[in-house]
Length: 314
Image 1 (cartoon, rainbow, N blue to C red):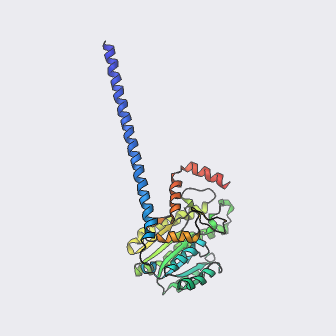
Image 2: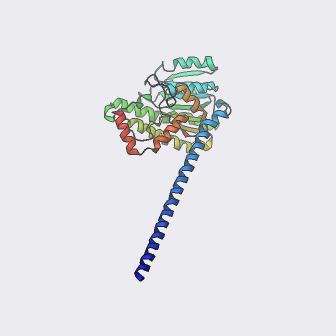
């Protein structure tokens, strides 16, 4: 009889322990689900706040808010030209900086006729030396520079292992996408600080939100510009200067044979969406389908992402 009572007591203790274990496990599951639901709700609210509300409730013209002139660095990129046109639509005059004299010629001729703004084209080859900065400094000296738009070199987005890049191209990429962008920012900041207004927009790519084999230089450049933009925002946001990092994914381009679609917008479509986020978010993809794409990619474990990227590249 005593043995039965002991067994019954042991059974009750085990049942009580299991019950406590399952209740604890259920509570953890509820808390985890609730945290994910809150995060999802927060992301949805952020998506609406950044990408939809600014397009519904438009603020005053950007030229009144930031300044009358914009400097566009690397005007050869289609997205940079499209962004310049959107600024011109807002009454902002444009200074194009490019190595190729034909890159911005048509756009520079079109904008004054279409929107009544002024345009200036500066030919600057930074691969030789930094003397081009003096030319730019002379041009912007007496102008109300309200915008600086830096655009990463499009050629870097092509898959290429580090050993396949020759030394000249390597030095040129580092110089153009880190050194020159930093110097361009430093060039326009004094005037912006004096007027207590201005915006610096760095257009990079969201393709490097995770490690990518075959894109070492692109990943390195994006990492630098991302931290550069964040740090600069912390330094100067309280002084009236807005720093924004735009990280789009694929944009339709005849150069790269990319066809237009929901997740691959035309440069003009992307620019229309991206410019509405100016002054709203200091880091964004600039285009709501790309933000959804970014959210999905960040949920993928690194090992699956790397395996998939290797298979895709090969």
